[in-house]
Image 1 (cartoon, one colour):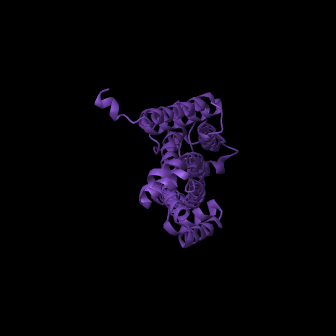
Image 2 (image 1 turned 90 degrees about the vertical axis):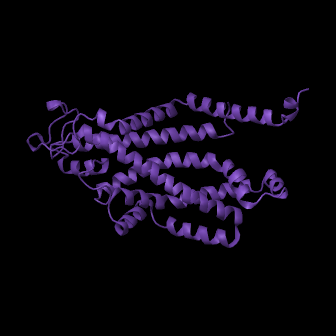
Image 3 (image 1 turned 45 degrees about the vertical axis):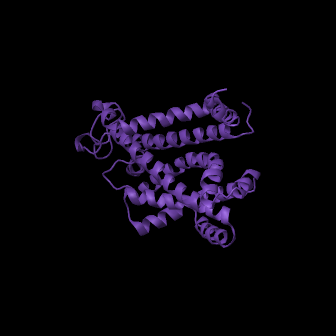
Length: 299
C-alpha cells in the first residue's frame, strides 16, 4: 500500500460523503417545493431589477414632467403611468427595489451578526452574562418592532444609513434569543464535551463546533426577516422618517399615492403590489428553506 493511501483517514471519506449527501438532499428538497421556487423566482427578479435598474428603467426616476402628471398606465410611453410630479412610476418602482434590498440585506445582516454574537455569549457562558444580555434583550422586546424602529429613527434622523441602523438594532433581540436557545441545546452534546476534554479553547468550541450547528435556524430566521425589514423601511418612508425624497422608495411612492386614491389609484396600487410581492417572495423562500433544512423531513 502506498504512503498516500496510508495517510488517508478512514473516517474523513465517509464524513465528506455524508456532508455532500446532506447538501444535495437539502437542495433537492428545496427544488421540489413549488412555493419555494416561486419565492426564489421573485427574489431573483428583484435582484435583477436592483442590479440592472439603469438599463431596465425607461425614464430617469427623478425627472419631473408636470404637464404629464398623474398619467394613466401606458400613456406617452409610461408603462405604469406617472405620479403627481409627472415622474415615471415604473422607473421609480424599479429603483425602489434597490432601496428595499439594500435595507433588507444590510439591516438583517447587522442585526444578525450582533444578535448571534450576543446569543453565543449568553448561551455558552451562562450565569451573569446570560442574565445581563437577555434582560437587555427583554427590554428591547418590550417595544413593538415598528415602534422601536420609529423611536430610533426619531433619535437618529432620517436617511438610508439610519434606516438600516434602526431596523438592524430592532432585529438584534430576535436573533439573540434564537441563537441562545440553540447554543443551550448544542453545548450539552457529547462531542462538545469531547472537544473540551481535548483542550480546545472557548473560542474554538464556540465558532468551530457550536456556531456551525446553529446556522440552519439562523439562516431561515434571517431570510424571513428580510421581508419584515422591507415592510419596516416602507412604513418608515411612508411616515416621512425613512429614505427622503426625491430618492425613489416604495414607501414614499405609497405616501404620495394615498392623496390620489380616487383620481389616480395606480400610484398606490403598483407600489403596494411591489411591497406585497417582495414580502411574499421572501416568506415563501424562507418557508421552503426551513422545510429543506429540517432534519426530520424525508428526502
